Length: 312
Image (tube, rainbow, N blue to C red; front, side):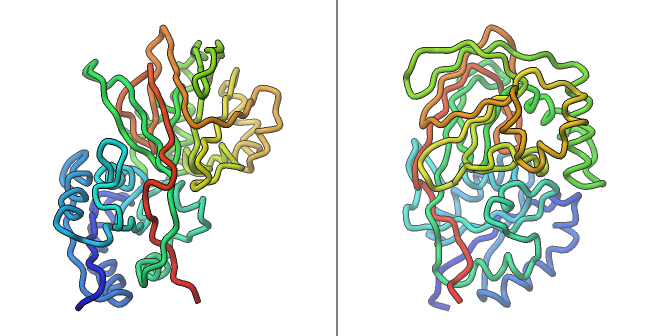
């Protein structure tokens, strides 16, 4: 009873509501691995952020996101305030329950419940970089959000909008593929002004501008194969001139990471970016669609402690 206190932030609607239906099984697996825990269900957008913040302020040592990448994003936003951890010694745990599973792919984690529960045992953790985006919210006011996987601008924001209003009954990859088709049919490359690490702005045309801490987005697209979530720098991928036929004919390249060798893919590294445009270009932040450009993005090296499996 004297071990670390763990709190589960549970999105019962994740995995097409299977998380809610199977929560007794999830809870039993976690308790077998680490003993007693407390938990709460999310009830509305950004509720996970409030639950995570409340758990940290109440003294919990580990707060666990039980849901998809969107739930994880909300929990991460509960960990940080003004660019600093609310409770520096606390760890972030993850039980992946989403349809996309892009964050877990970076670490080679399976979606198996027993493996996820095992990662919560012991005190092992690794540093995790966090990105912070300052942007314009849908209400026109300035807003900010943290992310641990990928923030992007362009057709990906429109895809998010489509995904979040569609069924995910056939899984993340199918859902994202269908939404990508719908979005590309009405998208044209955006003209952006991109500045890296305070340098002069360059004009680029973007189907997608991906600012990667992790490696995958869109339900398994390997957008940034060389990104590392603890190296203190973003890997930036710019796709230009991609059309629907490219996503069909080049799907093997996109999902295998070979797209980085194509002439209409460019890759950069930076710690801070400024992205401006005269158009309305939507953002994608860890699979969520909270607003649009212009935006400033910066990396916070090692800002969080990510719970990992104990050493054998």
